[in-house]
Image (cartoon, rainbow over all chains, first blue to last red):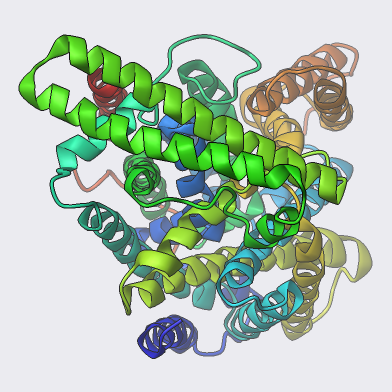
Length: 561
Length: 42
């Protein structure tokens, strides 16, 4: 990496962190440390919600997803605006009026302490797993870029995150998120613009889009219904709505953002902002991946984008023949792409159809060679899967982008990583202290004691994330792994909040057993069926609600106050 | 100070109208993506 890139990277990240610390300026109470004294404006909360969700995974993995699999992943977000509307109308006013620190604290007010504790523990397990994956993504960056050891990378990143989160609390986290999202948007537009600008002379933007479409990479909407397919219109709209209701309505890492709002209206607007901005943002990121695909029609990509594994298989005898077939398929695709564009310019339909068939045939040859390369890696390493989608975009950035822009895009990726991790360890600490320590261990202590307990818990979860990140990098496409881990737990959490908000008759025991039944159903679906993970939220939520309602028939009504 | 208040949204007058606008926006977005897919499918 060049000096200018280092300057841009270090300068941007230093500015993000120092500005966040300046805006927080030493919180002195638990309320200011965990909820910013409930003073935050909608735009800061809105960007913070977006930043917490948009980790480095978003930039690295989503672009690679489009390169490998096309843009169909955008459908995953179709349920998000619906979920935001439902939450703005229901959860936001309830959480605000009850003045809770955590979503789970509300469950004790509504049900009982054991339900609160159970759901709090489920949150700690699932978010604890997710935070390690989020920290693993930047380790991938430096493995590709500089060959730095993963452990050193995660340690340095973890140290930065822990320092400013422990010192500044949620205010530092939120204002850091705001700066980070500005850099992420800048990086996104620059990456897309540069990918298009790097196309060869004679290939227009329309040609590029046309070639991406001809290869099936612009498959943004698919109305076919298939429970095993995670990315179609129906799974996105139905499964996505349930997932985002769970994520934004029951996951403390998100709920805590809008609990900091100075009014119900400000908190609602922060969610509505996300309802409007999230899908276009994901579309742009995926479209950038599609343009990187077109760039690689003219510039030969490596057989595998993961450099360490590519080097490992180069000594295997079968590698040479795979590489030769890959080279031939690349040349054929490049020539067919030229003939296809020419046929479309001249309006020659016969030549166009023939060139399209050749182009798609060559693409199938490239895909087959990459599959064979992946299988060689699996055989060499003994692993059951290989996925290099996370390396596609970074390889493009580091090899072809001009000086300065590489630094900016890396700043966006690293900033996304540290801000999402900061939000997550902040919320993990909040639940640990408010729902477990203050509720069960030390019930009445001075405010200052809980302030320091919150700081200690933040440091603990930061260290935990660093250790777990060592495993996160082996989970295939990271963006799918993050959402899959969440889906194992979110359905149960959503179900109990649906019972709380919509069914006043249901009481503590029924809710508690309902959550256990919901989680059992989700784990059964995961281990014993082929149902796609997006449907786990629907299954879990329905089982919790059904079980809760059924059991409530056998409970005596609450005694009149 | 900072007590939860149920204020109207800054535009469209009521929250119900704002929520309806979000859902219409989603429908338009999906339609646009569908047309985009159809326009460039192989």
